[in-house]
Image 1 (tube, each protein chain N blue to C red):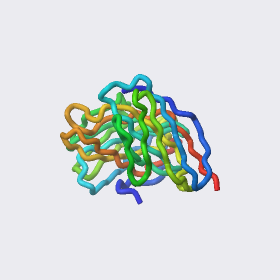
Image 2 (cartoon, rainbow over the protein chains, first blue to last red; image 1 turned 60 degrees about the horizontal axis):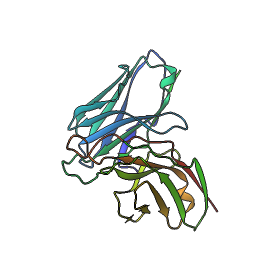
Image 3 (cartoon, helix red, strand yellow; image 1 turned 135 degrees about the vertical axis):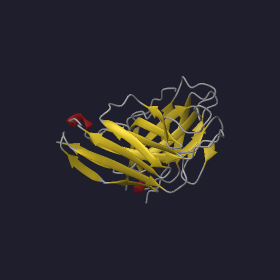
Image 4 (cartoon, one colour; image 1 turned 90 degrees about the vertical axis):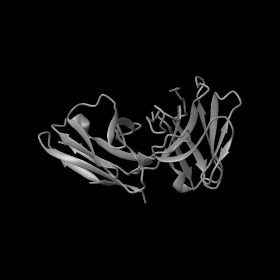
Length: 116
Length: 115
C-alpha cells in the first residue's frame, strides 16, 4: 500500500471539461511533486512544491494548474486539455530538510487520464 | 545532471541474483547514484543510493566502481514480484540548500523474473 494517495485512479474527460486530480500524504513531508508519464516512457517532472510554495515549474502549459492548499494536499487542476495530455499523472512527496542527507521521493500509484 | 545508460531489458530466474548495470561515465564528484523501480500499474519506488562506497539495504546492494563511471544494482534473490522497470539516476543530492529536487528518469531496464 502506498503512503501517497491519489484520486481518482482513472479519469476520462472531454477537451472542454474542467477537472481536478488530488494527492494526499500524511507523512509530514513538505515537498510535493507532480509527474507526467506517457505510455512506455519514464516519468517527467511537471511541478515541485516546497512548504506549500511552487518552487519548480518545468515549463508546463497553463492548462495544467497546480495548487497546494496545505502541507498534506496537492491538487492539479485541468482545463481545456488536449488528447496528447492523456497519460498517467503521478504525485510524489519527500521530506524537505536542509541537511545533505538524501530523502527519497514516495510516489502514489497515479491517476490514469484519458482525454476524448 | 549526468546522463545514464542502461540495457533496455534483462531476464533473471527466480531465486537467482539479478545484476542490473548502469553506465554514468560523465558523473561528477558530487553526484550520487540513485535507483528506483516501477512495478506495472504502480508509482516508482525508491530502492537505494550511494556516492562511492558500496551500499546495502533490505532491498538490494549497490556496487559502484572505483572510478565511479558505472554501477550495478544487485537483487540477491530475485522473486516474481521484482519484475519491474529499474531506473538508474545520477544527480546532486541537494538543490538550493534543500534535499528535494528534480528526478530525471532515463529509459530504464525492464527486468523480467521467470519462474
